[in-house]
Image 1 (cartoon, one colour):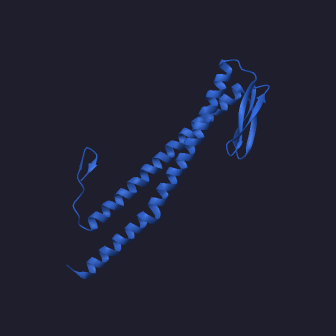
Image 2 (cartoon, rainbow, N blue to C red):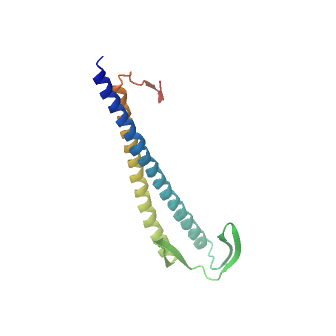
Image 3 (cartoon, rainbow, N blue to C red):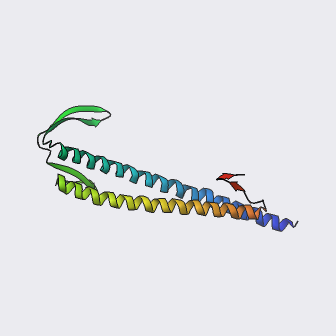
Amino acid sequence: MDVGIDNFRHEKVQRFEEFVDRRLKPDLVHAIAERDKVFEQQKVFSDLRRNIENLEKNCITNLRTLVNLGSEVYVQGDVPDTRSIFVDVGLGFHVEFTWSEALKFISLKEERLARQIEEYTQLIASIKAQIKLVCEGIRELLQLPAERTVEGRVF
């Protein structure tokens, strides 16, 4: 075999591996982390919606609760009128809503978060496909046999 061709293949394989390691894998980690953040936001709004619905259902207009001051230090708090609440709408702003207004806002927010999750899921799938494609290119350059799969297992 020609030494020049072997060097060319080696350089190509090395560039592909660097592309996967320096670009695609960090992009994948970042996309997964961002999607996880959106999942957390989705959970917060889902919990808030459920709490408001419970307040409405049980006609609770005042309550006593524990408030986390930070570092797991709690203080007892009294809420004399629960009919209006402040909701974090982003960028550090909080808006006072009635229960029905808050539920409408939360519904819209949950729809937007679901779309973001779907977009990140598609991005993650695309990056994984790119990684697989580059790995397949490396395999072909090295003239290795194709991986066989049986019931989702690679051999």
